[in-house]
Image (tube, rainbow, N blue to C red; front, side, top):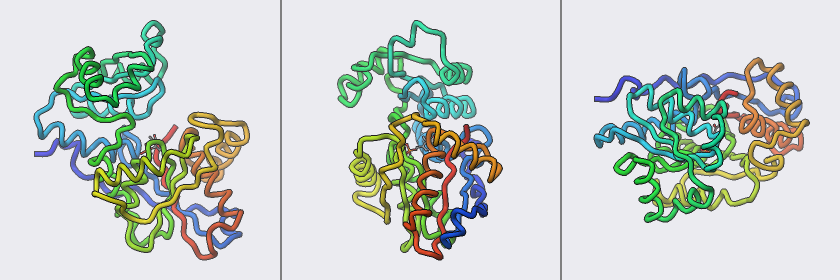
Amino acid sequence: MDHPELQSRPASPLVEAVDERFAAHGVRLLLKRDDLVHPELPGNKWRKLAPNLRAALEAGHEQLVTFGGAYSNHLRATAAAGRLLGIATVGIVRGDELAARPLNDSLARCAADGMRLHFVTRSRYRAKADPQALAELLDEAGASGAYVVPEGGSNALALAGCAELGRELRGVTDVAAVACGTGGTLAGLAAGLAPGQRALGVPVLAGGFLSGEIRSLQAEAYGGPVGDWTLAEDFHHGGYARVPAALESFAADFASRHGFPVERIYVAKLLWALTTLTTAGAFPRGTTVTAIITGRP
Ligand SMILES: *Cc1c(COP(=O)(O)O)cnc(C)c1O
């Protein structure tokens, strides 16, 4: 029997945003408020974690281990999910220098939710891609035998959870747009949309490596490419967690126009990209574009 927390939830709200920057180009903007899908866990993190937690519990694991940096939303969400489901969590954190300092707010939240934090050097953190190095790391963290969720939470089960988001958008939009970190959310979203609908991803990291990652995530989950998706690569604003002043004021303005809190690391870059593409005429008149609001500040 499923844990009550893991029972399926109602679709997240879809609301129309009246914005003259879009209306002037004949584009209809919808907001998919996936930040509201769960009271304690923001949108895509919940969609990615829920199927993994279900699998961990079904296989009888009492502990779940995952990986992240000092400000990782994924670590925070995993810690909260572990508390809600009564499953022990271990977070392997990049940067051994952090062990000697007071915890930042994000890591303090993880610890308060019961996550055991294990700090490792950057080189060992990177080396976890190698199975032998990973096994040693887990052993040292007291997490051998734990259910392993990869960094960022993107695996085949996570894609299945995000495909549900795509299914919730069938028949209501031409384009479904989402900000991308690992690309797992986009990879699953694209798989859940109906033929004729397109997923558009906005990477928040610089580097142009994401299409390859998305292809390999889809290959792992589905055996090959699924759905229609593209990336808009020019909207990372200098890289992860960079929020230049222009982006900051754009986000503050968007929040006051539309009356919801705009998360800066991902959601602000998505909304900036959609506004810029629309004013540049990238969407034909009559297009409906849905911005997926994946989280809250
Ligand atoms: C983690 C996160 C993303 C990125 O999701 P990926 O599946 O890693 O691409 C997007 N938005 C928010 C708010 C997030 O926390």
